[in-house]
Image (cartoon, rainbow over all chains, first blue to last red; front, side, top):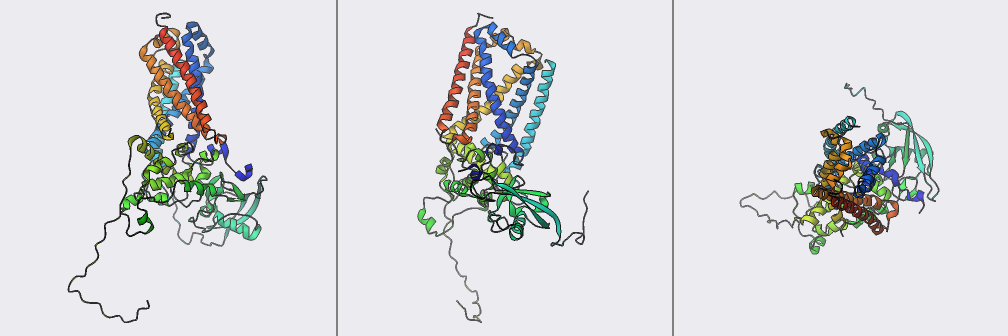
Length: 143
Length: 289
Length: 122
């Protein structure tokens, strides 16, 4: 079956489509998740150098220090914060089935589960933002 | 600032052409060659839907444009297509609401394309069939030859009613990011319908239904992106259905959740006639039956 | 194994990570907020001190296991949804699990080796 006959959206379907917040949240949850996974593997290797003694540790720390890495570290915290706070929303909705509203008789304009969980979404994003402000202050205090 | 308008102010001339809109239709000839865009100019009157515009094109400009439609009023679910990049029913989209000079139309994503705007929905129906979309009970004899109704309160009905409004238009699978890359994913339509039968207290097959989509390409490939609910034209909210299915499966497997299944209503007491009520007057016309 | 088992653990791990990783993040990367300089947190004497602490080591191992499981399961979910995953679900699961176990093994070894260095470097 040819590509044009099959007509599958492919990776383009992961984002865009003129759709709402939740689809972007889904997309960024994936991207941030992948980044954190790659960082985790790197982090295990880097911090594992402590087992080889002080010289090895200092050498490794030397390699990953400086303003560039400090900035990347802040970006990492941004990424983790989004993933964590959005993850809380997903645990609440997907796992516990809370904040979704109950099934009801649909009357136009429809009020769906997406609308029901949006206050939670906004609250968590505000909390994440506040946390990031505090973090930025901490980073600037000790660059 | 709100402005109230009297009825005479409102332009009620339905036949007046308000604006000209270009329909940019992605034409696919069904042979596997790349589809090409073609423009058609449609004079738009008040109240015209995208489907009306397509019918205008078919009648007056190009009879070879293919699209599928039946009821023209959002009930049959035949005219799903991607209008200006968003999956929607052509018959429920007002051209003037879009407020664009160019309207791009292409067939729904994630379905094999047959021709122009006509997708092959076989996948959708196969996935729907896989979740056994019918009531399953041990009392087969009663199901096939019903003697009485199953007891169900209005609240018990409303607990799943919205999922029954699904018209199988397939827009949700077209919008779903997982279906976009994973053709085997069971999909939001089937999950919404599975929720419908899991909640319906007349259905006694809860345990088996929990296992139906508990596999690699089952319900766990849903990540609550909400695209299905966003595009659903009937307020079915398949995303809610999918989350409820996850929740029920977990409760069933980890906490032994069971479902309370309803039974037949008690046998009704047959009516008795009270003493001393006068007889009705005799018929004045002969009964035809 | 039913898919729901793994997903249940994935969610529980996520919830625990929110708390534990939050504590780890604030303690390590944001220590400057509590007046401990960044350089001090990462100096070897401090690292060795924490490594030699049994409670810290247990905390690290739990964190390591949870993070690797949560991460591996998430990456597996993404890989399973790729167009070319059809019929390769088992291989994907094994590869992701293999990478996870490899890094878990290294992490455990490093933590235990550093724990054993007590008295040597401090």
